[in-house]
Amino acid sequence: MFEILELLPQIGIAPDRSVRPTGRGNMKLTPRETQVLDLFDRGCLWKQIGTALKISTSTAKTHGLHARLKLGAVSMREATWRVRNPDLRLKAHCHVS
Image 1 (cartoon, rainbow, N blue to C red):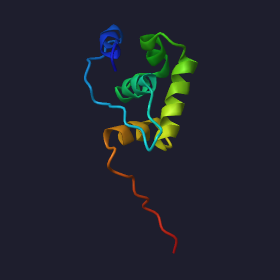
Image 2 (cartoon, rainbow, N blue to C red; image 1 turned 135 degrees about the vertical axis):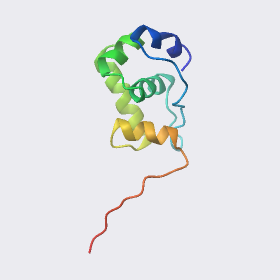
Image 3 (tube, rainbow, N blue to C red; image 1 turned 90 degrees about the vertical axis):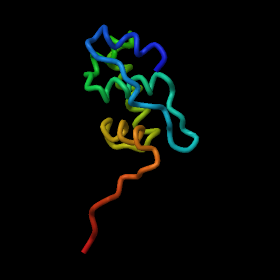
Image 4 (cartoon, helix red, strand yellow; image 1 turned 180 degrees about the vertical axis):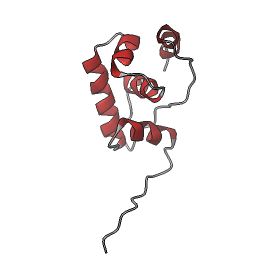
């Protein structure tokens, strides 16, 4: 999240440091994956993320996918939740009768 905080005002987002890189096991998030998660968590669209990071929309989505897979999340929203709550696990609420 080094230079990301400087880019945020350009797309109208106030900087804060809510998302931190953690990763699960040996799968650490890259700085770019962390940046993409941070912007996604702030409500940015893929195109805005690409513009802010000076990468294509497709590349932004790829970084998001890699982060999501490393975190074992089924959605980007879950991925940001997992980064914010690394010691908590989602519990399944279904059972077979």
